Length: 318
Image 1 (cartoon, helix red, strand yellow):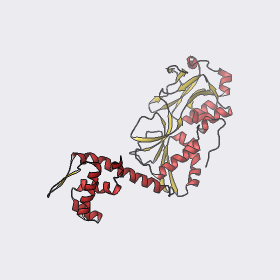
Image 2: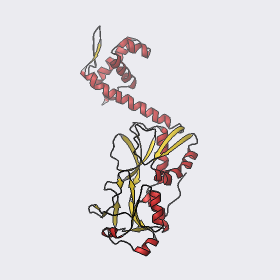
Image 3: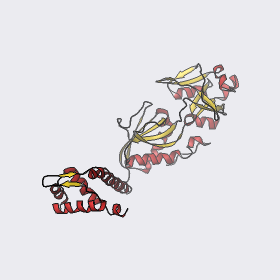
Image 4: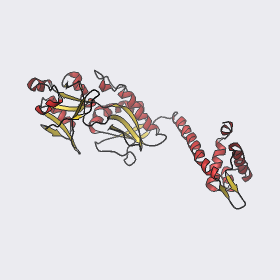
């Protein structure tokens, strides 16, 4: 342990340069020291590690197997230190310049856009670009720094900061219920007027389960199908039928009584995988300051639990 602690960063940097150039003189010129000093640093490093790192002769300097093994650790240690220095330096800076945000259309409208004024007030040097689409966005290929995504997080090629989980509720307006009654069990859904979101992969499937049991898909024949969530929400508010929507989309209507939650003893979903609300960004070891600032801001703004999962909705923080 004492031997490892004795290795300093300067020795590691010189070792890496020698490994890459296989030439003491080239490293000496770059570092502004003599070739004999470079050789002495390598000798001291070898003594500290108890391993020969290079074969030396008059024509070449060749890494040993120990040297080839150690280079990976040396690069990792130098890289970690550079990342630490960058992180500490950025703590003294203020987010500035352009940050590009992408979000699903309706979620962005309901829960991201209202927070942008507070974000701009907190970071006046920040320039914000907000794009909204329900299409899949690849953070490695698309011009987006922070992507709000809702669904199952299975791709390990990006980092994700999870704000919370998405839950679905079945609901209808008081007017609809006064005329048609409420279903007592998902089996009765085919006897009701159902309003169904239809995306690019087809209409949503409706799943229900009781606590601890398996999900069951209940086939329905929609009275209205639409690729626009707000259209379906307006139709439900007007008494046209039942909707199965995420909490973030209609929690305010449930709180005001404009919609009534149905079958509360059942869990509801449109697929059986856990659904997360998250911000994702390219898989870098050290996310840029602007990215961290935006995500941290919305962690605070959304709260824990998420503000739309409490009653009544609380105002967003600036």
